[in-house]
Length: 300
Image (cartoon, rainbow, N blue to C red; front, side, top):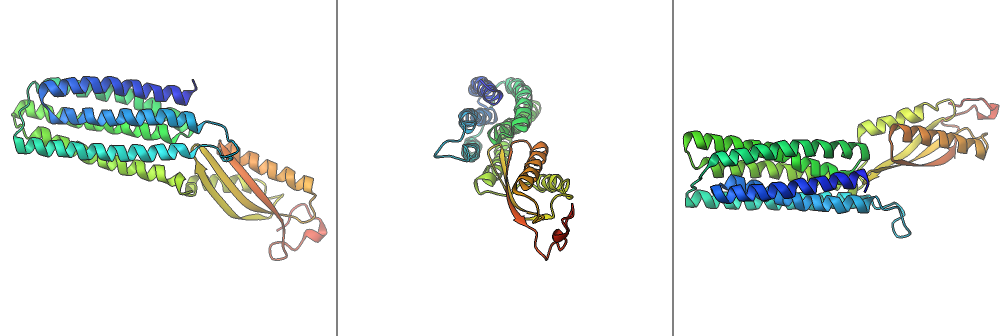
């Protein structure tokens, strides 16, 4: 089992445990805010299971039908996770409004505070682990799962504070109001996640910072190449793709041109791991260079 799969398994296990505890306490106390957190964790569990399978599939090597690999599976899983979270928020709002209309009655609110504190502590540990592995492996699915759990930390803290205030003031409406606030945070989370997941699916270019690193890598070879143009970038899962047209002095041999291209590709991949670079070589033109006839070591 690789690191990505093992980390996804950790998320599945922690969410399963928290669902059981939150459901038990929510039923005993009658707190809609605690039950809303149980629903949130249930959808997080579904998302974690999706992430578990997507990271395994996305690491499958390229084949005849998928020559660019299976990286976009992670983007698809992130989109599904975002839609699931959106549905969870709708269900929480429905239950909270229902409680307001019926008149809530909460028993043992301090038990809800305890389980929310436990939930926040567990999710802090697991989300940090998910973020660490997601950054190191470039996994969108694990990053989306980490975002789930990070939001859970905030919502659990909000529910705990709401129940503490309810315990002190005995204002029962605080419970469904806190549940609605939790749902609003979840809606914001789903929007962020959907935006993140859709970017690679629609072949959005790499970030400005990543493109700057590519320019820097090519710039190191200014003594060999004249310039470049028509650069295109995109990502698929944890793999970046870069293709560009490179202008070289026309007197260079094929072997010399190939060596320069290899060096540029190596430098780009050193700055941006998991990057596949494709270079189309073009001879310099009179507009960009007029000294090639002199076989100088540098043109332009």
